[in-house]
Image 1 (tube, rainbow, N blue to C red):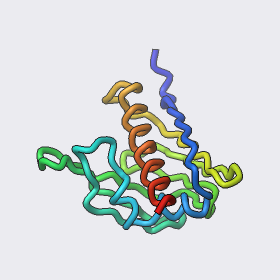
Image 2: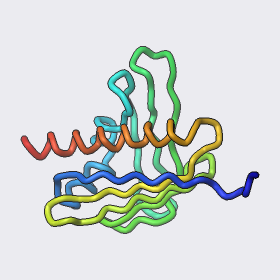
Image 3: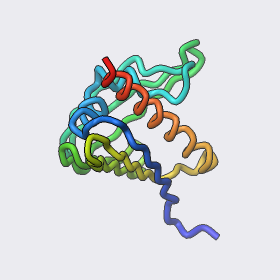
Length: 144
């Protein structure tokens, strides 16, 4: 029986980097284009980000072979620097991301409303893969 209430999926990842660095890598377009992918056969050739309430963001995600691509974007509802971001995706779904300082590490907690086309497990795996790729990118940058 449909309740009309969207299913919320929650992901957690601990990144071995201070929250200030994690925030920078998460929010700046020159970094977003380097980590925002769920697999090696995809990439994000373009990103823009106006990080403020009412500001818009957009990432162009494409298969590297050119077979498929889409824009992922929305509008920020709330931004608390180094702590949290909430936004509404273009299709109306809500997303909230918390950045929790844990000493020199940062726990990222992402909660998003699932869409109704694809299975919840598939959506969770896709978003988790992107978050895992972010973790790898940040931790590799910290080693340089």
